[in-house]
Length: 288
Image 1 (cartoon, rainbow, N blue to C red):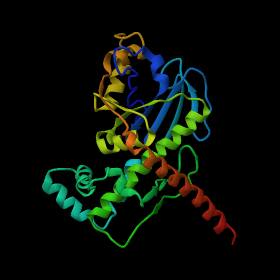
Image 2 (image 1 turned 90 degrees about the vertical axis):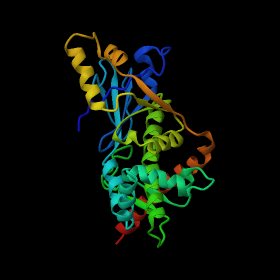
Image 3 (image 1 turned 135 degrees about the vertical axis):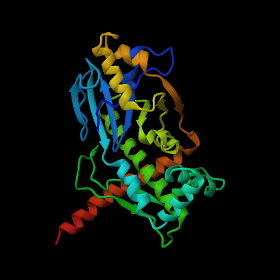
Image 4 (image 1 turned 120 degrees about the horizontal axis):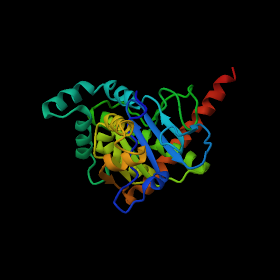
């Protein structure tokens, strides 16, 4: 996995003022894992988050990086391991969509008069099937699901997929809160990589974090990052900051739905309870 996937531009519009704006933006980079790098003028130590590293991403600035490991693999594991996957695969192929786009449209068809996210009101996931990288830094943690029934149809698969997606966004919120508590100032998310092409995933991040999500115009983030570095190395630009401003553009800004705030605040409370309970269960079982 390349670490210089893209230094996402800190300018949402022409009124923005250079690299200073980037200090308030969290980047979510999503190849096979969900990375959350953040820069600052001075070193900030965040428990459970890597860094700070000087000039690691942008010269002259300190970098912290949180993350959730194997997020793409988790989505595949949940979807492909479900009893209804064969039906999903067949219907997605017949519709000309990939399985995830089909699941998104299926969720829209079953939501009735409610917002899509509310389909998981009694279904909750803790996503650390591969341990926790940030902000708990505990590789021994396990995944958790609560709210399962005996039903195994396509509706159930779609809801479990949605709950897993929400859990990853809740994990991002968990990391953000650790960074904010430590002293970072963050009010916007920048998102690039494979999962950013899933607009439902993007909207869940906006709704759950309560922050707007900025999407890059160039979908191939690794190539743009390489081009930015190449432009600096060739002398076409005087700095990475200048190359970012000239080469990287904004495609769209996805805003949170304020009507969903209370729902996701409650989901986040459940999310934190899940890890609290897992630790209690571990303590109970160690007493043998």
